[in-house]
Image (cartoon, helix red, strand yellow):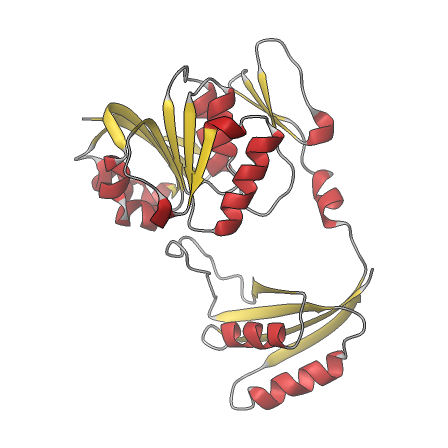
Length: 292
């Protein structure tokens, strides 16, 4: 199937309104792209980052009229700056299959495999986590996730209780259970992340050991291990709450932190957690430690 793709560049204040208007005009999807290669580090939790110059890209079915859509947008936003209109007709690229060409089995600490469905590994003394493209971020390919998987695969999780705060695809919760954890509680602000986590738990036959929650539904509890692979700002903002999720003597693993942000995160947690030396992969670091 082919599609009409229509895009325009506007400022950070107007772009969300344009995206909503594209949707109102029948777009099947609307996405944002940075129009100026402006770096993005840490939107607040639950926030969608909009750049100071943002390209808004809308996809329409072929029976739509892109010229009419453009005219309506221009009329509606006539007082705003709309730049660099572009139009393309694009074919169906079978996005998941194309993505899978670049997604290969990954091994962590000689114990944990993360594999697409058709490339499962059955090596002795290892476990295999099946993960395919889905709704939420987290496949193990990004350093922030890989650092957490490496930690999980390097420690004895037998009988442990785990909280995965900011679970994304649920990869860390599923990995923890496959590696011996008794139960994992997965929390995320995004309902799509909950859906993805439940799907991945079912795919790996651990659905009975993984409980999923939106933050408002998460009951008061503590766990032996808490994983928070988010970003530096929300990790700092929620440091007291995240630390409170651990039992005394429990272990905290923090990721999603750029190296230059490490000191700020350390300062936020050091009163609660006896932190170990940081571990770095590319520009990202992992912090771990034991609750006082």
